[in-house]
Length: 199
Image (tube, rainbow, N blue to C red):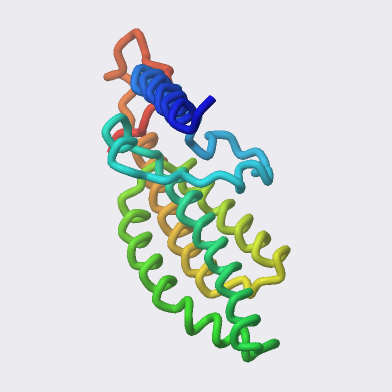
């Protein structure tokens, strides 16, 4: 088979895949790409894949917050790891000097991520999603420690604090809405499917 035939075959298979993707039920696609709605341990497999968001994917659906959070931070952790190894090899530094140089290099990326996530976290009303992101922070911190890379603990503490504050706010809103619920106004049949609590 010639190179041109192989390329045509790849293009045809990609086109078939895109047709299947476009016709897939939105909930099925979201479920396949989300970090999950249960709180089971995240396996190493979930850390091995991150999303590449582009315009084509955005047309069909929007990603759930925890999926984007996981994807962005997986790329961030990989970048931190590679950058630290480069710094130690290229500048031939070790110990605290390497940690300080790495922190200085990563400071702009960290500041940008904190600013961007602060806005997105404040707009999130999904308590499960926020809690999953808190768990992911711990998982990524452990991953950096396993790789023997400086864990950037200040960054993870800042993001975790933002998430815990938002989690507390959302749970308080949920509790308040349940307390103020007028049971007499609930008409049969009652919708028992998962839904957002109204504010």
